[in-house]
Amino acid sequence: MPASGVSAAVLAARLSAVGLPTRVEEHARYTSVEAEVPETLSAESWREVLDVVAEADRFGLLATSLNGRTLWAVVRKAVPTTGDVGGPSYQR
Image (tube, rainbow, N blue to C red; front, side, top):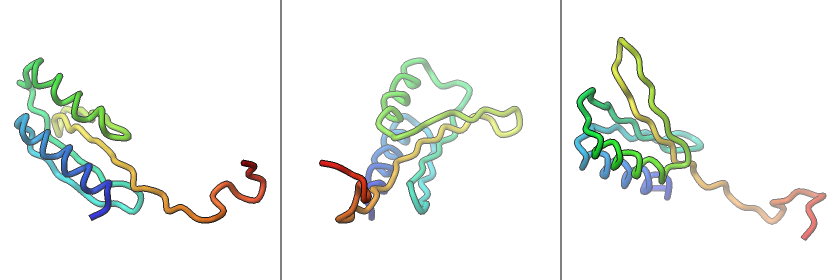
């Protein structure tokens, strides 16, 4: 499993510990974690959730009247390095 997958799995486990059901999905450039957020989440639980997603590269909350609230977080996969990372004009 790529490092992003491990990081995402840790995020998902911590969100699950708060009581949020989670989904983890691998994508070409990142691994995503989604969690359904109940309307009755306490302020203390929100603080824990924010501490968790702050470790992701990006996160947000999608709220709709039809689907409720879905929290999402993204962990980017590392870009492979090559001998010419900076390109021909790169100066050291």
